[in-house]
Each structure stands twice: as C-alpha cells, then as structure tokens.
Length: 309
Image: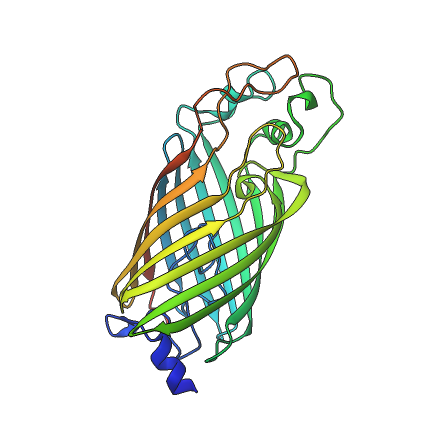
C-alpha cells in the first residue's frame, strides 16, 4: 500500500516531493494564517520537516498586506507556526471611518498568529489524512475601534452599554485532505471546518459571537512541479457595522527547486471595512460609498525551506 500511495502522491520538485511520503504526506505552501495549506484554507497535511519561511504580499485594491511566517513539523505528527500580518490601510485609515469614536490609529494594523496542528490519521489509498489545529491571534487595532466593529457606533457615540473590545482570541479547526489519481494526473481535495470569533480573521478584533467557517480546496497537478487550484472560504458576518463577505481565490503554485515554492493567485475578499464619511440618524455608518467595496487582486508568496537538519 505504501508503494501505491507513494506513486499516487509523488510530485517531483527538482527530484524531491511536493507531497512526499518519506515521512508521511506533506504540504508545500503556507496559507494566510501560517499553517500548511493553500492561500486561505488550512490543510490536514503538515509542513515539511525542514523549517520553512514564507513571505506573502496581498494587494486587493484599497488594502495591502505583507505577511512573514515560519513553520516546521516534527516527528511527522505536529506542526507549529508563527505569522505576522502587517495590513496597510492606505488612504482608508481606520480613524477616518470611526472619526469621533476612537483615538488616533496608525496606517498599519499588526496581526500576529501562533498556530499548532496535530495529525490524527495519515492518508491511505482510500482514506484522507485528518488533522486538528488551533491558532492564537492578536491584533493591535485600537480597542475603541474593535468595540465599534463588534457593537456598532452606539457603543461609544450614542451612550450604549455594549462593551466588546477583545483584541485577541482563539480559533480551532479540523481538516481532511486526500490526493488521488485522475487518469495520468493527480487531484487534491481538502475540507476544513474552523471555529472562531474573529472579524476578518481577527484583524478587526474578536466578538462574543462564534461561528463555524467552511473551507474547500481543489488542486490539479498540471505537472509534478506545477499545481493549479481553487479555494473557497465561507466567512462569518457578525459585525453590525461592516459587512464581511466570503473569500475565494484561484492559485498556481510552482516548485522550481526542492526547497523553493512560488505561488501566485487572484484573490477575491469581498467588502472589507467599507469607508463611510458620516453616521446616519440611527448611529450606523452609511455604507453607500465605494471605498473598501469588492476587494480583489493579487496574492504572491515566496517560500523557502531552510535545510538545517
């Protein structure tokens, strides 16, 4: 069975494996929260045994993000990861959106994520690999702004009693990943269920309302070192102020060397903090402006494995 599965998921990356079996199936790229996976969805596969650094740039129109992450797996069982996202708000500075409600906010939001993933069941000829994982997340967004995102403008400007300004929180997920042959090629399918309370992953803080997000990935091996894929991630919509839409992307991952991965994607993140100049009579933002609407654009990632051991 090991030989059959090895032929099934062997993908040469300069003679190495994209999804190798020497120490169990391993993923090759890093998703936006730092775990091994694809662009916006975690996989059950672990990162490579070598320490891995991932550098990601995202530009979806009104917002940009620069992400630096590191992960590694141990004993073909446990993966650990750390990620810092620096979100550049550009002209859509948060203090403009919540002017008169929050204090001064810089043009960047720093968002930190610590992650762990544990493989429960390895992939076989008939069964997927299954893993569970968790993230601890923290944003440095002004707590007054977080409170407005979670409670609405009545929390401050209109004398309301809501107080929900958590700038940190936990997510937990379970994922199942399977690679199987289709003719002479290979296809990867992945399902992830993620539980959490974050608004826009947690970049805008954490509410009292929890939800389960479903993430799906399909990948097609065009060649041993070239994979085309699609992600879709259902998102919560808990904020009374800013609408949160589902995310999706179309990506291509190229592995020119056994220690290098380059990923390019078109990402559609929907509405993100639509800017509003004024409050309406009910104390809510007038979301009729186009700033922050329909955010879509480029996702680029360069990843390198550090051959330390």
